[in-house]
Length: 285
Ligand code: PAF
Image (cartoon, rainbow, N blue to C red; front, side, top):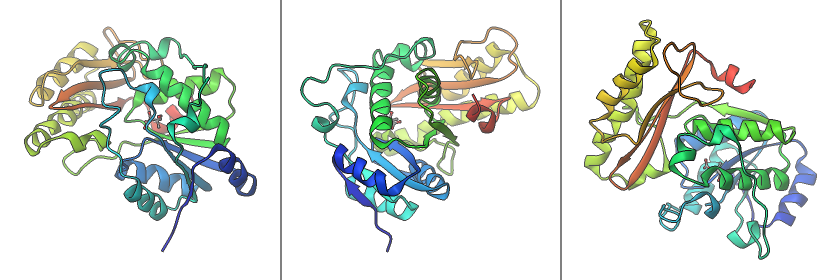
């Protein structure tokens, strides 16, 4: 049976890294699912892989689910071992944010809309912890799902602007057989909410189908998503934005990321489809 080395301190990661050499990092908050498994398998295929599991308090707002966020360490370790990860960094909050910690990485314009507007301070928390993980693990590659599309763009931009020299690898969204994007927060859904939640991906797929039939009008794509997704609830936003800048598109779209956020019961779910741009092109940004 495969095992994964569990490392809990920064000093021990540095020690491990000396022997491991060139590594790929899969940052996670745990409660891992098939989406994370895909990321970890890809990282392991491309070299020595290390994951991190850390529910990062600085990226949660005061009324968000930091305390109740699902935690499942032993199942996570099994998944990471099976996926071929060599090691996993599982720090405490004190290890990551010791007394006196006083620095934050504050992203710019690309973080200001959509999730950034809905969750003030969220991306500063994400950038701070990811920059810190990069500084601790010193990976050559880091793997992120494009399910959190804006997060991926914020991190790509941070890596470029701060000359971090890390290859950010975008990974496809892993979905349930009915289309719902896999998310640790799906665990909050009751059976009835789970049935309704599928309308979110259906809305996005309806826009993707319209795109395939030639529709390029951003307002029409937004309207299609709204109509179909409304079976799940009223989305907080439906966005048709430029995939590079995340600015809303007015009129004709050459390429787009169509995204939404919607509360279904206790879960706030996000999802997106990328149109007119491949993951390879996204990786090259
Ligand atoms: O996507 C996540 O799980 C988190 O935002 C990340 C990137 C691990 C930072 O805490």
